[in-house]
Amino acid sequence: MKDLAVDMGVGLRLDFTYLVLRGDFAIPIRKPWLDDPWVLDKISFDQKVWRQNNLIFNLAIAHPF
Image (cartoon, rainbow, N blue to C red):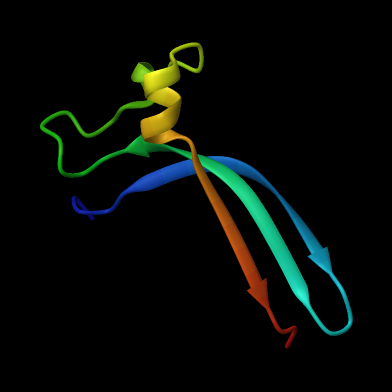
């Protein structure tokens, strides 16, 4: 459990009969490789460097089950 990373975010999922598209933005709130792994108090959306290093976009394209 001590090696588990945690993030939070918001996303959009589009379900079609032949395709599933999902896109979301996430930010880390726990980085297990740091001495103080919980970084929730270090979130700073107003700093460009922080956004470049921490705001992650995920895109998933899949077939429905």
